[in-house]
Length: 215
Image 1 (cartoon, rainbow, N blue to C red):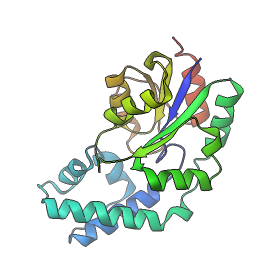
Image 2 (cartoon, rainbow, N blue to C red):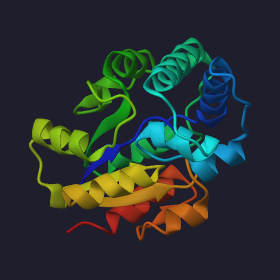
Image 3 (cartoon, rainbow, N blue to C red):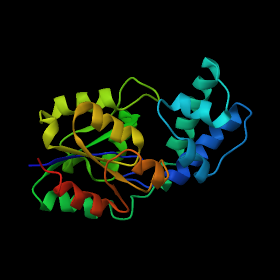
Image 4 (cartoon, one colour):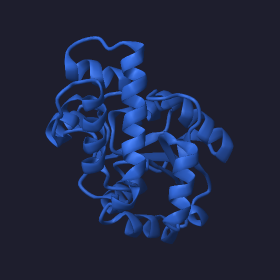
């Protein structure tokens, strides 16, 4: 049986416009100019401090990073009510259930905020585990995916990670799970395709591809 690990931001929720707003608020706080969605998808990477280094083409101080991270999360948190589900997110979750698979959510968003949001959206009871970031501001996902699988008590070979970022694919590669990337969030499609995993235009299509990856 397959277990699907869903990413949250940029995957189950379509938050790219709010993310860019939040990045621009953070950049303004350190006296830098704003960006657009194309810029974000071109330069985004993890660890997130390196995203700002790439974007600004200069190093950033610890103080600047602290400000960027704080202002981003303050702005993003204040805009949560404007973040919609991705258009077919619920249909994809329904599809996973109809296939008799299990599913969970793993996000690099702070865990307390994530779990509260998932509960408000009515999905907590449909997920085996909802796990967010507990200690690693802006870090990479691989170590968190290892912890996630240990809490689920599932074998990596039965897991398919569905997300929108190169970090999702990198984490899957480190841990040994399959991965399908959704072209709707953090990166341009050409960058996603460089990861060497399937890329789909919709989440329902991602679930369909996942069914072909069962090992």
